[in-house]
Amino acid sequence: MNTMEVTKIAGGIFGALLVFLLVSWGAESLYHVGGSGHGDEAQGASGYPIEVAHTEETGEQSDEPSLEDMLAAADVDKGKKVFSKCKACHKLDNGTNGVGPHLFGVMDRDIGSVDGFKYSGGMTTVEGNWDAATLDAFLTKPKDLISDTKMSFAGLKKPADRVNLIGYLMTIK
Picture (cartoon, rainbow, N blue to C red):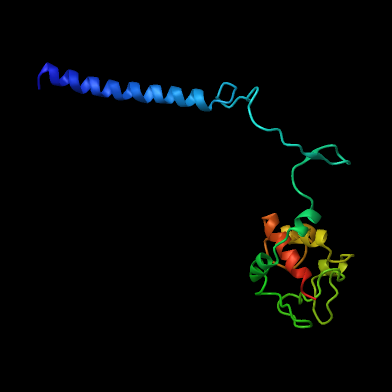
């Protein structure tokens, strides 16, 4: 290998690196929005401000829609699919209990009130009705709402799944 071949190879490598560096600088100048680019807060970032409602009680910003707004947009068909996770223990037929009580007419029904079903101690001591907010809290993580429930279900993490399921259960009357 002579000197001219080594010079050509080195020139090709250095040329490729130079092109890469120039493209990188050009992309940075096109897409840079402010700040140092190293995790610091961007000062003067471009974009559109998003108005967020303040809650009256705490004055904090609320970026989540309310449960009522989400229920208004609930998809009953998706809720029916989410109910497939509940089918193993709960039935929808009036008076037909499974491992868990039937869910026919569960909305606005007293908690722990299905005749003929033996509830856990914690479920019988809870006062109130199954309304949308209570169901949402229970479906998020049952043991957080009623610590000694015998329901072993871990809960539904996605708010959309819970709302769609509640919307579906509202139709079972």
